[in-house]
Structure formats: C-alpha cells, structure tokens
Image 1 (cartoon, rainbow, N blue to C red):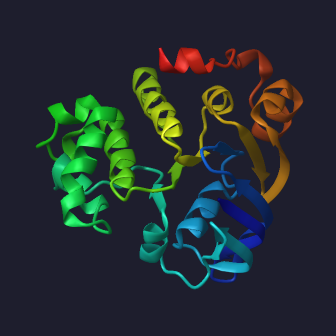
Image 2: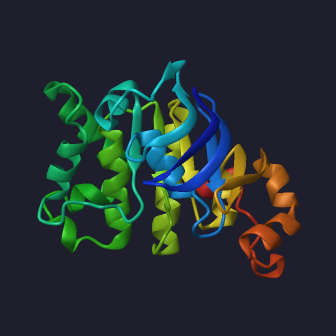
Length: 249
C-alpha cells in the first residue's frame, strides 16, 4: 500500500531524514519508533504532504505522491492524527469531527460520525463540548476520529499515548484493533514501546534521521539490546508486552 524508497526530507536546507526505506501493507500496523529528534514526526508529515521530500519517492497504491498537496493525499486515502492532537479549541466535538470529513460527500457525515461514536462512546457524552474543555484522552479520541472522518485506507498516528492515562491508552488501542479488522492500515509513532510492539506487525527504528533497524515486532521485543542502546529504555524497567487479547479485553 505505502512504499517509501530512499526518502530524505527536511525544513529549508536542514535535512532531518536520510534515505529512509519503509513499507506498509494493507491491513497492517507498522510501528515507527526511536528517540526524540529521530525523524519520526517528519516522516509522517512528509507522507501527509506537510514537509517537502528532498529526494526519494513516496508511493501510495502505486501512485507517486510527490505532485500531490496534502488535501489531495487525503482524497487518495491518507489521514493524519497529529502529535499534540491539534483540535480547534473553540469548536465542539461534533464540529471538529465535521471538519475532518471535508473531503467526503456531505451525506457521508452522519454515517462517519456514527462510526466514530461507536469506536469512542465517551465522545457521544461530550458531543457538544468545546475541544479546549476535553481531557487529554478525550482529545486524542477526537483527533483519531477526525482523521477517520476522511475514510482513510492508511491512518498515520503521531504519539498516540503521549500524556494519556493508561485507561485512555487502552481505549485508543481497542479502537485501532477494530480498525485493523476493517482493513485499515496504520503507521504508528509511539513512545510506549510495550504497547507499540505488542500491537504492531512490524517495526522500524530511527535514530538521528536514519533507519537503524527493521523487522517484525516480535523480533524487536526479543532485542532488549536494541531497546536499551537505541531507545534508552532499560530492559528491567520495561513491563512485559501486552498480548492482543489483553489489548481488546
């Protein structure tokens, strides 16, 4: 579905991502992990069209995305839930969701809102609340829901669990499990390594803008030296990864 070949990107003359090769298949969840400043967010922003590719190619379902601005990439089936959620604080939950569906026919709005509320029932209780009054967990639910309003084939999620209570992290992962079952592919940037590696099929590790390791998430979980040396997480401090069944219970 998504094929990235030798991609470099950055801001102005500064290159922050160097020669990345990455692939996401249909219905697959891929984790993109690494320390702060590794180039993870820049990768998602480049796929979404908000950061310019300086070299290499990004293809989605065989189409070169280089000529397409962000709004056209949404029409192709790519949606981004950004780091920090970035909701419209003076708009209600409903209004934030409606904004996310701007690329779809108006008659699809009610259907897609119903789908989001089915994934995140809590949002039905806060439907008319302003974005700035929501908790961090509720804001993340809205951010993911807003992206889903575009009916994506590929969902990009940047820092899903950042600043969230464990209960809300679990709610978000339960929603992603349902989306996986619907055939939606996910490229996930995540600081919670146990959750990311338990939930994903494969993982890519970035450090200082370069790919340093890739493989199955199962293999990544077994590489405690990788976790310690690249990500700075001591193996003794890492809880045992949750299983798929635990994530959906």
